[in-house]
Image (cartoon, rainbow, N blue to C red):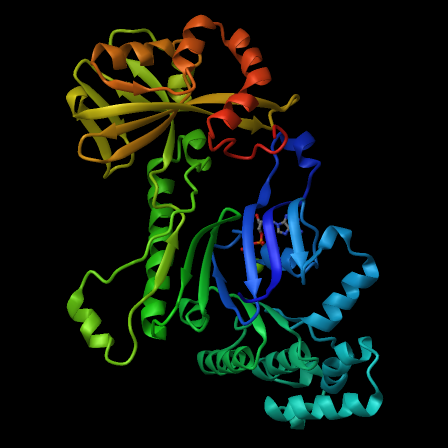
Length: 467
Ligand code: ADP
Ligand code: MG
């Protein structure tokens, strides 16, 4: 078992915690991130702009504090480390490369590169030796006595790399290091990073370029502060790995495009993505011919951990044929229609659910609690979860937001002889406590116990305070 250098357990980052008072909602730059950096790892990170990549790097490298969760470096919990211990850790174990190289313009390239060694209080002749050695490796010996603004972009970036690795850090953190480089220089840089990694440096690299990302051994994809995909390269060739990365990144941008065009009216239904789960899928090559083509030298074995393979739980308001419904709820949520003979739901322009009742194998009833940072009083709310399992094996997951006539849901299921699995007895609860406030208060006192007893995977969303 290899060593864990950085271990993040369920970390969240909120930049401006006062925002709760200003806007009534916390903005999570990182949400419930679990992440390990093992010795020898080379991990690339991608994600849309604003998805939290830089925040993740800053938190993992202790440049910024996490808001909640546990972060350990070299086995020590960061929140327990003194300032001295933290600076020691940063100076001794970490190297950084940023997009804008962050060289100090008033210092020569030599002095810039020497900075970490000076901070580590190394002997002057040792410092001179080490700077010269690294400069030779990166082919910048001739620049050592120039100032950064007398060098080209590529040269400055190489100087920044020299500074980052001169003290042979165990961990190298790179935030879009190729942002200012042309293709040739970028690939040269990645060649160097690969070599460093082979010599024992563990690397985390943020990039917006799938080709650059494919140099790594592992890939993670962030969206809205969450890790939604992970791939291990295993023995796959760089080209196969690259193709898998492209699949994920293009799929995500297409999904976003669809969502933006089809759902722009319905803020409520989009932005709560309760589907993130940890299922693991091994992508197999559908096309056997392709395998034999590529497998002569390297076998295709990209291991994709897709955190979104389980169906997305849709937040809905249910409307029942012939029954009254609440106008304002019907405008705020997407509608799950229980018609006379069919159940209908429009997922997007291209995907919809349209089934007759006999096609439904069973309905599974559960509940989640979510901490809603509403103004002025944040509170826990409870939502009924409905999984419709069809006879063809497909499952559709809904979070049903009907507070007043939720019993109609049970009525309609029974009317059509659909098996209802309701281990926690929520039907009974809704029938005996029809009044929302009475039920709500009861749930506030009892839900935690029920969730524990029945292993409900609650709470979802941003509920922190409840547990
Ligand atoms: P990325 O690097 O993926 O583009 P960032 O980690 O920089 O994303 O940002 C994630 C989110 O956090 C963004 O919405 C951004 O606006 C916000 N954010 C980043 N830095 C700060 C900060 N210092 N103060 C407040 N919000 C920030
Ligand atoms: Mg960034």
